[in-house]
Image (cartoon, rainbow, N blue to C red; front, top):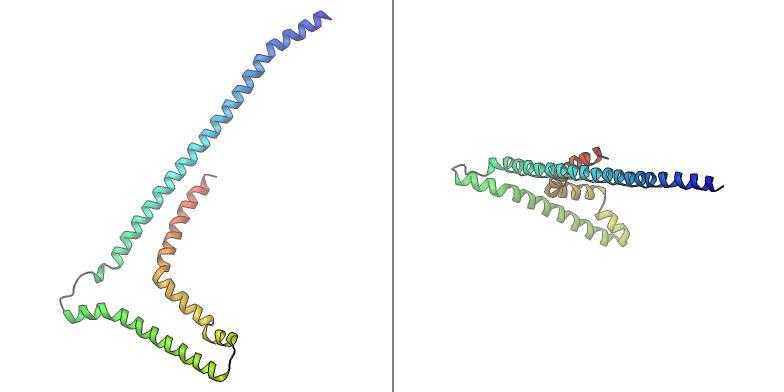
Length: 162
């Protein structure tokens, strides 16, 4: 019996350090794998940031190029004045016409005795939403679309690594 206890104790004294060494090695390997994953994720984020910067630079150059045609004077004061004047003038005229039409519809609705729900439906319909969306899209939509496309490139890079 003592021999069996001695054999078991001898076996455990040999196996215990090996078990501790194996557990330590396993923990170190898990740590190394996690560190490598974090390093790779950092590299992906670095590349994604570089792509975002490149997209922003391209957008800036494109915007400069788009409006480059109108940056120089033609040499004729009347032509230059009309080039500066016509777009805001047309915009204001159409806005004024739209506003007058809506005021006329409001006056008509009130004179006909429509309730508030009917007036709102009459003054703000699907076509009004479309006009409003087109105006907002014209003034602000290009930037949103360009940022979304740039973010799509960044997300594609980030998704690739996962």
